[in-house]
Amino acid sequence: MPDEPFKSTPSIELMNSQEIFEISKIFVQQFNINKIRITGGEPLVRNDFETIIKQLSTLGANIGITTNGVLLHKYFDLLAECDIKNLNISIDSLDREKFKYITKRDLFQTVWDNIKESIKRGFNVKLNVVVMRGFNEDEIPEFIALSHHYPIELRFIEFMPFTGNSWEKNKVIPISEMLTLVSEHFTFEKVEDHKNDTSRKYRIDAESKGVFGLISTMSNSFCAGCNRIRITSDGKMKNCLFGADEFDLLKSFRNNESLTELIKLGIIKKHKEKGGQFSEMENVNNQKIINRSMIKIGG
Image (cartoon, rainbow, N blue to C red; front, side):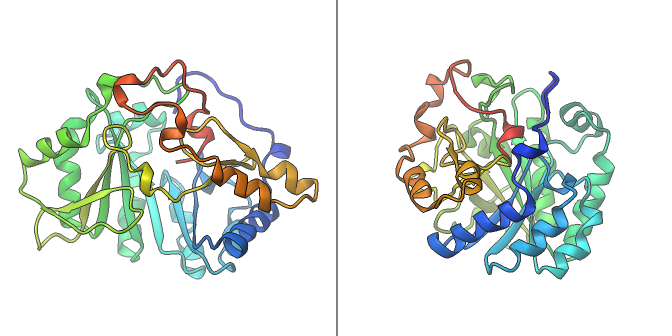
């Protein structure tokens, strides 16, 4: 969470549950989208979360949730009822004080309890860890051990530049360095990746219950294989996490206009890599990147 105060978007500017459903239906039925992930901010804080999930589950797409894990215990039964199996849970530290510092909430135990309950209930659990030099790289071995003892995918994510997150190049730990840090504590072996995967996966050994992956957005991008489209909570389509371009689907929808051509335009205008704003990490000037803060894009 950012240190500076921020304003919430007025409700009238946000997609309501019916708009989320109808726009999602267009993507599924006209563009053959077969996977929908609900992210945030934090999706579980919405009063209409139950309605959103129940409606989306009728579309026949694979539904996943990305969450900070704080409110998960309230929705386990709902997710099971809607046959939703895939949970991505963000947790950047296993240390209570570090967790409190980065999230501004002293809720580590709640999140950890919900992670264990998710595993117990048989959800496909991925833990997302943003690694930052000088903050949590010393926890890499402890995180790796989780992937050996639990049936999860533990994913290390390189620190990425967004408005207001105080990104600095020297805070980024490239995946090559992460693997070196891992090798100081464990032997490990490569696991086969699937087409369009964002992470490169490994496991400690054949006895491991889970795997760990590395998402190298900054040092070794996977833009050529990216097939993802994002829609922000206020109905703007972004064809890249780093892109400045936004296509106002919600405005067109509320004006009873067809979204088909606008969606096609957004896809066609997707840049070769990283939203067309930078290529090599060494060339990044965070002050010149045009984008939202991460909490206004979604994890």
